[in-house]
Image (cartoon, rainbow, N blue to C red; front, side, top):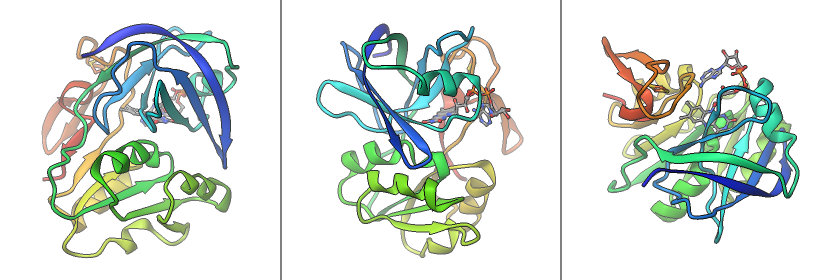
Length: 220
Ligand SMILES: Cc1cc2nc3c(=O)[nH]c(=O)nc-3n(C[C@H](O)[C@H](O)[C@H](O)COP(=O)(O)OP(=O)(O)OC[C@H]3O[C@@H](n4cnc5c(N)ncnc54)[C@H](O)[C@@H]3O)c2cc1C
Ligand code: FES
């Protein structure tokens, strides 16, 4: 069940070009892989949506790409700081698949460590824009890693149930190769629970509120 709670920062770690923010879990449920949480970004009016990356005992951990003021403020937190966190929210990945292949592009790898822990020892392919970004693959031991200009879609073979998260062009390319894939999409989110319509996106000719109908949607 979704709850809002003020959580303490346990650690802030550099992982290549990204930052792993480790929070005390409090009484929050980690939810299903692919679900997300709204994290208070200090000094900003609106919280920011983040996928759960890892759920070690007693913690919730989020992988951050500091692309703007909200994510930069979250990366600047220090152990002992406290922030409001709301979640888990949205619909995660279906885990009842026969032959999973996890596919991540850039910060889209964020939900995959928690997903792999839940789904078993599935193969993983990851694509990054630089070697420094690719250092984050350490969170997914034995993953196959490619760096631009090699595209992660070149590593997707037939016969797998693809579960993917990454930038929109990557997801569209994955959908072309694997029409049965499950794709975790992104859109700017203000509330995270269906009230503001800020996350409405046109998918297949229909407007969908990604925070309630997604973020994971069937490619078809
Ligand atoms: C369900 C979900 C899960 C997410 N999980 C993660 C995660 O695990 N780690 C992570 O680092 N980020 C994640 N994001 C993206 C993150 O929430 C946004 O990038 C956030 O708005 C950044 O805030 P900011 O203030 O730092 O930058 P902003 O100033 O809000 O944005 C910086 C730039 O990114 C663009 N942008 C902002 N939000 C989005 C978005 N959602 N999709 C595409 N472009 C956007 C803006 O147009 C701008 O160009 C997730 C988003 C969603 C919807
Ligand atoms: S973020 Fe408000 S409706 Fe989806």
